[in-house]
Image (cartoon, rainbow, N blue to C red; front, side):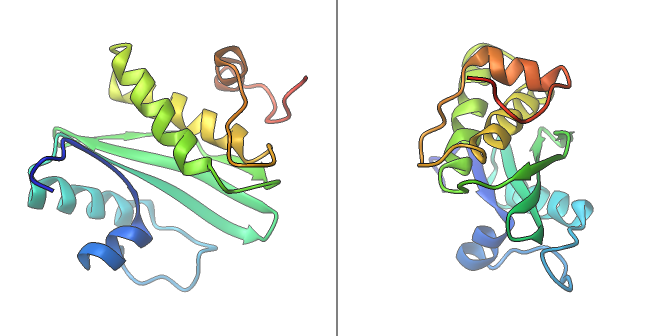
Amino acid sequence: MRHVDVLMTTEEDTRVVFGIGAEAKDSYERVDAESYEQVARTLENQFDLRAVAITVRENPRVLLNTWSAIVVAGGAVHRAPRYEVEVVDRIGAGDAFSAGLIVSRLENRGWDEAVRFATAASALKHSIPGDFCLVTRAEVEQLLRGASLRVSR
């Protein structure tokens, strides 16, 4: 961890790997966003990270999830909107999130814009079979403007 600047993770992974987890919850149906924020702050402080990004999945039904993310950077919290996603394939959604966050930061976007772009890209990925996120920047930006998660091809 001493070589890590930005950590992209899930609450579940931080609980398993580092023993740092959100407050106990009844199920994945209800997520306490403040608990996830505290997990990110704890990781940021403990490992002296520039930023911690955590994806947040709520599973009200097997094929219908709520998807969002937070980034804690420099003590500030940046939240993405929540998307209700119809799950075709969850595999690759985390990779799509990471790619969206990385490309956004390489383009010198701020954390607010970066987490919004990354979350929109990964929300779209849920609708694509296989583990590749076959969406265009225009499709992600269209979703950010309020379009449907259904991609026209």
